[in-house]
Structures are given as C-alpha cells and as structure tokens.
Image 1: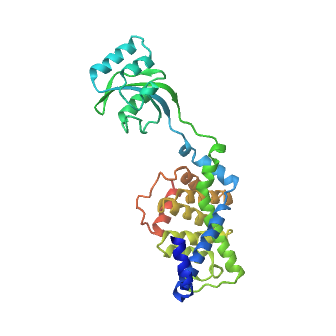
Image 2 (image 1 turned 60 degrees about the vertical axis):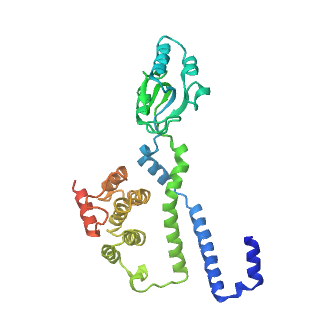
Image 3 (image 1 turned 180 degrees about the vertical axis):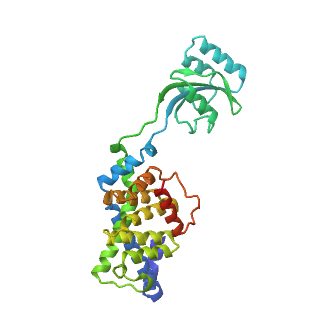
Length: 324
C-alpha cells in the first residue's frame, strides 16, 4: 500500500514540487549524517590502556550477585505444611514430600524447583517477596526452613546450592566495557573530524564562535567561567587540553571537565575518560590525587551545593578538595 502510494505520487510529479524537494533533500542529508556518525561510532574503540583502567576503577560495578538454587513446598493450609515439615524432619526425601504436599502449579513437576534467585530478585510462583529471599539466603546448602507464612501462603524453603558473587575477569567483561566507553571515544573522534574538516576547508568562525586559534588558553579558561551551560564549559576546557597541552591550565582543564561530567551531568563514563586522560598526560599534576579520588568515587559523591553550581563554585570545591 505504501509503495503504491509512493508510485502514484511520483506519477503525479509530486517530487517536482520545490517544497517537497526541500523536504526530500533535508531527509537525505539527515540519513547521510546519521550513517556517517554511526560509522564513526562503530570505528570508535577505546585503547587497551583505557579499557584496563576503566575495568580496574569499576570492578565492583561488574560484581555478580550472590545466588541460591531454591526449592519450596507451598500450601494454603497451615496443617498441611506442618505435616510436610514433620515428614521432612523425620527423614523423608524432599522429592517425595514435595510431590505429595506442594500446591504450587509452577513447580509441581520439578519437586518444587523455583530456580536460581538473587537477594532481591523475582521468585517464580511467589513474586517479589523480600522475606522469602531473606530466608533462602540464610539457609546453608541442602538445608530447609521451618514453615513460614509469606503472602498468605505457607512455605518451606530449601536451598540446593549456593554461589557467591564474583568479579568476572576483564576478558569476559571487555565487550561491556568497550560499549560503555564507545560513546565517549566516538564523541571525541567526531569533534576531531569536524575540526579537521574546518581546517581543510578553512572554515572561519565569528563572534562567540570565532576560531579557537584566535583564543589563548587563558581566554578559553575565562570564557569557560562565563558560560552557564555545563557542556559548553566542558567544550572550552577540552579545547585548552587539546590545543594547549603544555599550558599550566591544561591539567586543571581536564580535571574540571571531568568534575562537571561527574557532579553536574552525572555522566560517569565521560568523567572517567577526562580523569584518565589527565593521569595519562600529567601523572605529576597537582590534580592527580584528586583525579584518582574522583575515579574511585565516581557516581557516589555529589556536591552539597547541587547541580546548579556556578563555575566559580566548582573551582572552590576543587580547591577545597586539594586542601584535604
């Protein structure tokens, strides 16, 4: 149907209408731009050093949850669950007692098997019941609980196996780390591509958008303090680091950019990249210890003065942390 309508529109020369031509040109440009930026993103892979550093700084975030393999016998009546419990304590096998007493239709054929559950997860046949999970994780391997009333049903819970959470090695987590950092690398690659094209075609900016070469590191630093938009401030700080890497302001610019990403924009992956770049380029910087502290605490600490802090207030916070 859609194809037929499109063919009819072409037959009637709708594509020759100047307004429609303009819309088609706009759509064509949007599709090409998206394809181009998607290609940049696909080719934007963080280097091995950055991957390793991000993994080392965020290991706890990759830790798997503790798990138990849980079974249960579920009854509506207390008398029936007490009978089941009496048989279990007398030495009857779990399988035989579950086959006789369990009333949960989801686990009847599997001797009351619920499956693997984590401390706060959903329990098949029970739902989200923190008390059930709490009891299950308090049991030892191959131990069963006393009858307990949970959500108007009587339960005996048994744990067949327990597995403690662990931090997977980097080789297993690498695809996940790469994807988390890909957007950061892609954004930097895209900005560099734009800058290279501007240089190749001699693009000149005017007014507030004037070419960066016309600004010193001090000018860029001053302009960063004058704008209110956090991302605009970050862009100015990144220009200092990129165009004036030998400036006394370069390391502070990287730290401040990371600080804004972390505390105001809550973009911890972008913040990590800024702090890691600072430590890689300026390991002896007076901001190195602060950057290490921020990496360790990314996502945990917020400025007391909130998200709407001015550039001056952020600088004061940085200086106060240096003094600690």
